[in-house]
Image (cartoon, rainbow, N blue to C red; front, side):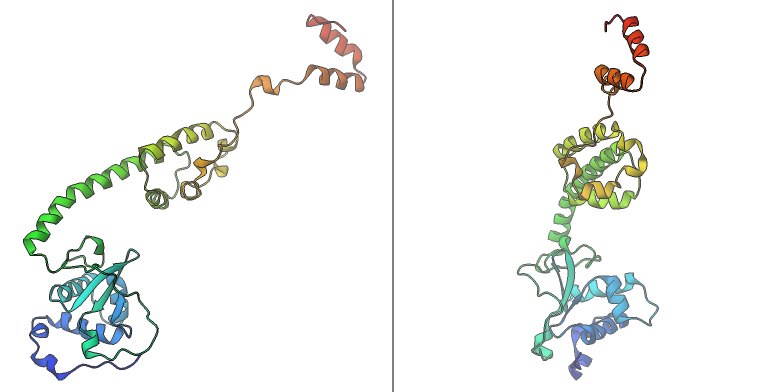
Length: 267
């Protein structure tokens, strides 16, 4: 990684002067840690490990420092493929961009994430800095009930699935697999009858033969046929002709003739 340029004008910069000591140090360490395009992984835990490997600071302190830099326009946080990244806003003005391969994706258009105390944790919920604080608060308050309602509905669907599934192991992995399906009542209506039939099968009487719930979900097993049902008593009854032939072959013809006579048949 090449050397970075830090100009003496930082000593009289109003933006830098408005930062706390930890926020200022955080900014300088960002400069020397970003790729050649001023970008970096914006997850607080990653930032802590990369920027402060020997310092005893918390992830929360890192998250707060990042939020401050975002709020004053020194850093932009954006989302790409559901992953948070950051960009130093004035990177091209102060640093030399070499002809090197990008390590992190560039910000998509209209993907700016604004002020938030959970900048990297919930980038998709952040608001552009151009919005006023009152607008941000109003929009956040209006979205919160809807988000809670959606989360509650999803949890309710999962609990119905969990109650129906006979092998209750690795619930967290099962929940993640369930959420990836973006389920609704219609999908659950396909799963439950399948599970009810499978629970009556001979195969699923042995718990070790029941797949883990996350495996069952990831492989979409409900789209195929459930394990076969156990045979009825009628299915297990031997064929009379085959039984008679077997008796004769074993030299028990008289016994077979007696058995048929006692049952009302004839030889």
